[in-house]
Each structure stands twice: as C-alpha cells, then as structure tokens.
Image (cartoon, rainbow, N blue to C red; front, top):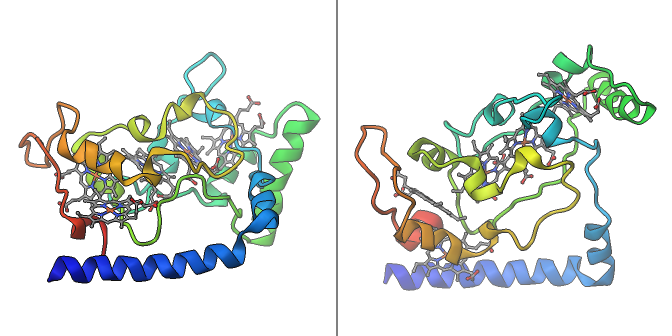
Amino acid sequence: MKKNWLIGGLAGVFALAGLAFVQGGGAEGEAAVAATIQPIAFPHNQHAGSEPGQNRMDCQFCHFSAERSVDAGIPAVSSCWGCHQVVQGTTPQQQAEIAKIRGYVESGEPIPWVRIHKISDHAHFPHMRHVNAGLQCQQCHGEVQTMGTFEAPDPVWGGSNMGWCIECHRNPPEGLQKADGTPIEEASIDCAVCHY
Ligand code: HEC
Ligand code: HEC
Ligand code: HEC
Ligand code: HEC
Ligand code: HEC
C-alpha cells in the first residue's frame, strides 16, 4: 500500500514537472541554458589544484557544510573577499573578475552562481552521509581541482540518473565505514530513503 502511494505521489510530481517544462521549455528556454556562464569566472584549479602556482585549498574550506549538512554549501562573498582584498590579479582580465567580487561586497548582494549539479526535487541527497562514510568529492564530481570555470549546468552527470545511486548503494567501494568504525557493505535501496 505504502509503495503504491509513493509511486502515485511521484507520478503527481512528474505531472507537475512536465507542466513546468512545457511552459519554460522550447527553443528559447534551451538557448538560455546553453548561453549561461557563471557571474564570475571562478577557476577551481587555481584555488584547489596542486600544480606549481596553484593553492591546494581543501574543498571543505569553501564547501564548509559537506560533512554536517545535506548541502555542501557555496562560500559567501565575504570569504572570497578575505583573500581577494589582497590578491587583486595581475592581468587586466584577472583584475576585472576580482573587481566583480568587490562589487558584490559593496552592494551586499550574494553572487548569483548558476547551479551545475542538481537532482530533481522529488529525490533527496544528503552530503554528510556520503562524506562521513569516507567517499571523496571526486568520486562523484570528477577531478574538480583540475577544472577551470564551470560554464553550464551538467545534464548528463551521474546524479541525474537513479541507476548511478542504486549501483553504488548495492555495491559501494571498499573501505567505507560508519562513524563507529563498522564497515559499510551496502546502503539502503528503499525507495523512501531517497524519495519523500
Ligand atoms: C575558494 C573556494 C573553493 C574551493 C577551495 C573549492 N570550491 Fe568548489 N565551488 C566554489 C564556488 C564559488 C562554486 C560556485 C561557482 C562554480 O560553480 O564554479 C563552486 C562550485 C562547485 C561545484 C558545483 C556546484 C554546483 O552548482 O553543482 C562542485 C561540485 C564543487 N565546487 C566541488 C569542489 C571540490 C571537489 C573542491 C576540492 C577539489 C572544491 N570545490 C574546492 C568555491 C570553491
Ligand atoms: C584562501 C584565499 C582565497 C580565497 C578564499 C579565494 N581566493 Fe580566489 N584566488 C586566490 C589566489 C591565490 C588566486 C590566484 C591568483 C594569481 O595567481 O594571480 C585566486 C584566483 C582567483 C581568480 C582568477 C583571477 C586571478 O586573479 O587569477 C578568481 C576569479 C577568483 N580567485 C575568485 C574567487 C572567488 C569568487 C572566491 C570566493 C568564492 C575566491 N576567489 C576565494 C585566493 C583565494
Ligand atoms: C539511492 C537513492 C534512490 C533510491 C533508493 C530510489 N531512487 Fe528513484 N530516483 C533517485 C534519483 C536520484 C532519481 C533521479 C532524479 C533526477 O531526475 O534528477 C530518481 C528517479 C526516480 C523516478 C523518475 C524516473 C527515473 O528513473 O528517473 C522514479 C519514478 C523513481 N525514482 C522511483 C523510485 C522507486 C519506486 C524506488 C524504490 C523501488 C526508488 N525510486 C528508489 C534516487 C533513488
Ligand atoms: C556520493 C556522491 C557525492 C559525493 C561523495 C559528494 N557529492 Fe556533492 N553532490 C552530489 C549530488 C547528488 C549533488 C546534487 C544534490 C541535489 O541536487 O540535491 C551534489 C551537489 C553538490 C554541490 C551543489 C549544491 C550544494 O550541495 O551546495 C556542491 C557545491 C557539491 N556537491 C560539492 C561537494 C563537495 C565539496 C564534496 C566533497 C566534500 C562532495 N560534493 C561530495 C553528489 C556527491
Ligand atoms: C559512490 C557511492 C554512492 C553513490 C554514487 C551514492 N551513494 Fe548514497 N550512500 C552511499 C553509502 C555508502 C551510504 C551509507 C552511509 C552510511 O551507512 O552511513 C549512502 C547513504 C545514502 C542515504 C542515507 C540512507 C539511509 O539509510 O538513511 C541516502 C538518502 C542516499 N545515500 C542517497 C543517495 C542518492 C539520492 C544518490 C544519487 C544521486 C546517492 N545516494 C549516490 C554511497 C553512495
């Protein structure tokens, strides 16, 4: 009974999502997505990379809530400014990007970052459970520390496919542990842990 109710609920969610898609879609909607770039050309490699001249910053220095919250978190403009008040860039192009940070600090507005990795609203993904089990960010997001600027949402990424979640839950990589040190041999594939 409970399962039928859940599937009915999901179908309802899909009917709504379908409607939103039809309204927001079409050639115009697609062009808007393809042309999207981040408001500031933020280079992951210069901050988190380990090549000479890169800064080896820990992912969680900026994505501060990944081990204690559902969301990994995006840093506030004040934490960018903590460094960039001093690090102003050398080329005119770099200086123009840093000037945009100053603009957001002065206006008090958050930087309107474009979301890159997102699953549908009917599914639920808790970062802390995965990070605390010992999974690395890179196992799911790729080698972010080697990447330049993210330029558009990534629709073909693993997280937009339920099979990717289930495959790992059935057979997770070796070496993962619960907080009390018990090895993790599998994770739940109960519909209700991910859909509610
Ligand atoms: C100096 C701060 C900083 C560091 C260090 C950093 N990030 Fe980020 N990260 C950001 C900002 C700002 C964004 C939003 C802009 C963007 O998408 O490029 C972001 C975006 C992301 C996204 C995409 C979020 C989305 O919208 O889906 C992922 C994934 C990510 N970071 C992973 C990592 C990983 C993994 C590391 C370590 C290798 C890392 N980050 C290190 C600041 C940082
Ligand atoms: C811990 C210090 C630190 C923090 C925090 C930090 N950055 Fe940086 N950032 C740097 C350094 C160092 C460079 C490399 C500068 C260079 O090599 O000229 C850099 C480079 C950049 C660049 C490329 C332009 C340039 O000067 O090379 C941009 C854009 C940028 N950062 C934006 C941001 C944004 C946006 C945030 C907040 C989400 C942020 N940074 C947080 C230290 C930091
Ligand atoms: C480990 C997490 C997880 C479990 C367990 C899970 N799902 Fe999903 N499911 C997802 C994610 C993630 C998506 C894709 C979301 C998106 O489109 O971004 C999804 C998508 C779906 C969809 C939409 C069609 C599709 O395949 O994209 C349906 C229907 C669905 N799930 C039903 C179920 C049912 C029924 C169960 C139990 C038998 C179940 N799910 C178990 C995570 C899960
Ligand atoms: C098991 C796979 C997995 C791991 C490990 C993982 N992520 Fe994610 N990440 C996801 C999924 C799935 C989403 C989309 C969640 C959603 O849409 O609700 C996401 C979204 C994000 C986002 C954007 C939204 C947010 O949560 O703020 C950032 C930033 C991010 N991840 C950074 C990280 C960092 C940094 C690490 C390592 C500390 C990490 N992730 C570890 C799968 C993972
Ligand atoms: C690379 C492996 C991996 C991937 C990919 C992955 N997970 Fe997980 N997930 C785990 C592990 C391992 C645990 C168990 C952690 C524990 O036992 O503390 C877990 C736990 C969870 C839980 C908590 C389950 C509970 O019993 O309360 C949820 C919810 C969840 N994952 C959702 C997702 C969704 C949604 C996706 C896909 C978008 C996903 N996971 C992708 C490995 C993964």
